Length: 126
Image 1 (spheres, rainbow, N blue to C red):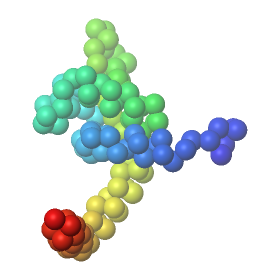
Image 2 (cartoon, rainbow, N blue to C red):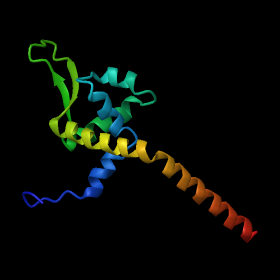
Image 3 (cartoon, rainbow, N blue to C red):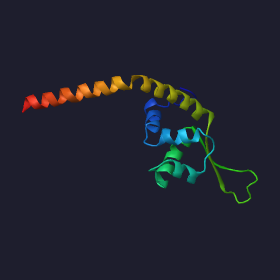
């Protein structure tokens, strides 16, 4: 807790577990992206959902934007980018992905065993 404000881990995990949050952050890991570029690169996302996702990520400090060029006389959008906080979060997510790669078969086997046991129990009840 800092400054008398506690941020429940559930809130942070809720933001990150959103359908598009980590995908948007992964796209921004490649550098600054314009809104329409993100829309094109994230197949299946619509404008409304992308705006909502970007706002949630900005609120928690993972993403900065919309950014404008200082000399851009038209004030047009230049793009969104990850903050340092967002970059450190993606490093952690990379560790989780490595763990998943290493343990994927165990998870698949556990799910298969569970599903088989559940079907057997349902069959025995009939």
